[in-house]
Length: 96
Image (cartoon, rainbow, N blue to C red; front, side, top):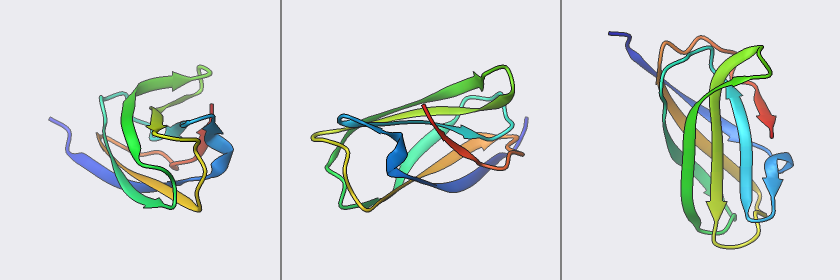
């Protein structure tokens, strides 16, 4: 069984769409992730988070994450912690 690795990833407001942040993180892993909020600097309250393995444009293995807020997604900083077995990526964040 592969060991879980963790990484804190900061997300820019470029990923904001209405009351959500929708983005992909290159992790290099095909395993199911666990994602938690690491930092919420002046964004609204988080309503829910969805995260799952995704193969982005047939090029990158990683995690697609959607964070839904109670109000419009505006703030000064937001970060998540990703735990996923076998991560080897460069952790690039790509807005969806």
